[in-house]
Image (cartoon, rainbow, N blue to C red; front, side):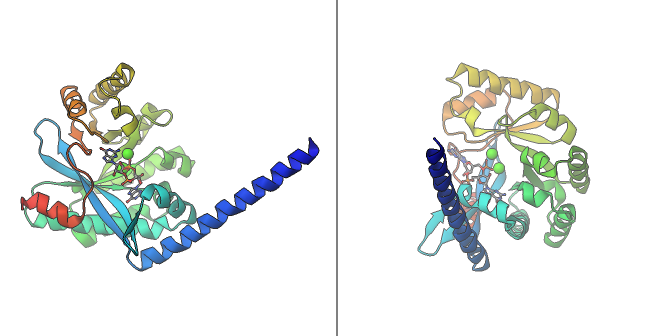
Length: 278
Ligand code: C2E
Ligand code: CA
Ligand code: CA
């Protein structure tokens, strides 16, 4: 038994160093990619459910490697988080998204909200609020056009809940809106909503997939929508892929819809064409 234990230990160490090596390689590649401007933003439309109006977009990062291979953010965002690279990359994302939103605004595209994902590692930076403020100032984007998407992960990363609430309060004082992403997947979501005073919540894709067919998922979504109404929160459903899902959500009072049923994430050029109707 002892020998076996030892072997296991060796295997574990080998596996561990392989993982570590792979991570380091990816981290270095990502650093180079950022410097060489291989990162770009895609935009996915958000539709007002009742009217079908294009009301906002979510900025989603893409990594186009040389040779045109697309690397998924699900793969490199965790590495960027762990290495801290997400801080400079996140600043670039925020600036680029705000600039783009301002540009669309100036070309008379109508009121459009810009949602930007904020990683926990980025949020805990001491000067995060100042960064947001100066980005808004430099780009000229009115604060109320910007939505910061956070996850429950920020509360874990911050450790101090009081501090998290305070930081969110400062952000809201700037005039930006706060959205709770992937709502329903973590713990004590309801408590966070109240303490953090978020403006909107995004129902996690996992709940949308089997709606309305799966009656358990459907009643969870109905419960979330009822609760949001009571708390006067705006609700967005993401990952909406079918007409049935869209109709169900709209009829249940979901405010905005995002998903392949309407549009996939697209380049800024494609988005511009969509906005201007050519
Ligand atoms: P997320 O914030 O939950 O983003 C939604 C993801 O769902 C996006 O994947 C989007 O392309 C995808 N999606 C949208 N509609 C549909 C649909 O109808 N069906 C399906 N199956 N999927 C749909 P993406 O772009 O690969 O991003 C994955 C995750 O990577 C994001 O999840 C977010 O956590 C992270 N991420 C992406 N961009 C950024 C960024 O700029 N900053 C940070 N910090 N994280 C980002
Ligand atoms: Ca998001
Ligand atoms: Ca999400």
